[in-house]
Image (cartoon, rainbow, N blue to C red; front, side, top):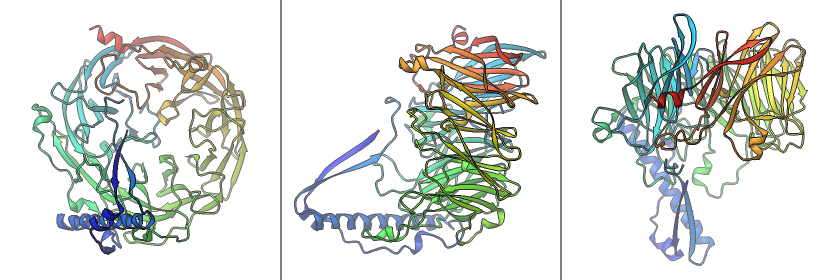
Amino acid sequence: MKQVLLFTCLVTLLMSGCSSFKQPSLSGLKSAHVTTFQSQADFENYMEGMHQLHRYRETERRKQLSEHYSEGIEFIEVTGSRIASSDLSITNNQVDNVDEGGIIKFTGDYLIILRKGVIYSVKITENSHDILHAKSKVEINQSSWNQDVWYDELLVLKDTLLVLGYNYGLDASQLLRFNLGSQGEITYRDGILIKSDDYFSGSNFGSRIVNNKYLTYLPVELTSEYPSPHKASVLPQFAKITDEGFGALKWQNIIGAKDIYKPLDMQLSPILHTVIVCDPLTVNFDCGGTAVVASGEYEYFVSNSAFYLSTSILHEDRLTDFQYEGVQTQAVSRLFKLPHSGEVMGSALVKGKPRNQFSFMQSEGALHLLTVSEAHSTPEIRALLYKLPDVVFEQRNASIVKPQREWSVATQYINNRFTNEWLVLDENLYGGHIENRHVEQLDSLSLTHLFRDEQFTLGLPHTVDRIEPIGGKLFVSGVNLQENYSVSIINLAGSPSIDSEGVFDKFLEKENISHAFNYKTVTDNYGIAGITALSKASLSEEMEDDLSIVYLGVTSNASVSLAGQAKAKVNPRTFIDCEVSCSDWYGNSRPFYIGNRVFALVGDVLIESHIIDEQVIELTRVDYVRDLQMH
């Protein structure tokens, strides 16, 4: 939703009613080296400097309007605001041993499912025997809490369940703990609220478990040229949720000024990029944090050892010179590294911007990074591959790091993925919109070796909507000229080549986020890939209640085949009285495997199958939502 503020201003009033502000000094708005604010007063001085800059820019903007218009003028200011709720592992993780927040998790004998504001437990093992039995559920929202909240991500650590949500009524993220009992019963334990902006991302995830610690990234807008009238600019504060509910919250700082790194570059609308780390196994749910002030255009990546943040840099002359016509230089990004160990943050400069979290990979003491220049900044769009060892992340403002390789690409809209040895890149001419299936030309895949001077291009008979490493191969999927779902398996051994292909005309992939895919190696020569799917018939009828997990058989040097399908109907009346988290922002279906067991979460239904003669055959299913509603 956008709030539109309309007002009229006469030129004479513009000239006489605006205060005169001299151009402010910018020297105090950035640091020459990595350092934190030394005190609360130090931080407040920075904030006052930002307010002076905004007042100066507003004065200059009005002055220029008065010089160009001789009559009364109207101008419309559009400010962003969140949509109110009334308007609206077994996980395919990017990094080994870094579990990302999702909608279904596995611990002990139980599967734990997060679905529309409710946590469910389903028992899958008893006395070493396989079973599938819905055991318990709990409404996340307690009776004394407000309803304007969305619960998005679930993580588990032993018998502790962790839920991340966003409370729009309080402008705060909610971090909640639940206990899982020996009989599958789920009980609320405790939680905290942290003042922040919404963490939601269409492709990244807000919470992770790293080294048995709970990590969440929370952005906080410090100040803006167009601030929301409903939001106060404050440091991240937290409040413990007590039995008295939200009416008796006692807010206190979760980080202080000395936990905040000063900006290394000028900003117009600085964001406090905050990393909160909690110990979920302690009695008091101890949490702390570190933050850095940087721009609001960013991507982040979490490895086993560090949190990486890439932010864009604004040319300083544009802050005070409205007639700026400087040379459009290539975009530069500031890369921050915050080690999980608590060591001092490091920083590096690179050309271009990363596309998403999959533009990063940490391996053998170095960060591999792909960036792409913007179309308006250079005569041609360039892809840049970096290998950034720890030593390049310095505590001072250093020069731009030289890329390992640089080459021309047709568009800044790319799909990218790293494997252990390769960077895989597709030039996505459709801007990343998977629903745009009116394909007019085929795609090609570029593969660049990370350690050898080798680069290959493979022509593909379909678009590239998904790139997934599966062992020593790649699963690459999209749609072909006939708008049929298509898969190419790329063998990465030696010179990369297409190993096998498959075309399917009855369905299309429903969700293209990373968690909606999973792969299991069955034998040395055969594996099963699971995707979320919608039948073409339901798409043509604009009815998306016919969901399924499609299993594809992947055999070396043979076609990709349909190995099975786990289907279920979505009951639109199941959540008719829903008041909290009433939309599946993170999707509602997942393929996954536990040992030799094959599972599909399809909306309200959990389906188990087994593999017989390279086919996935349904064994049993449980409608966990219906079964637990009947108890």
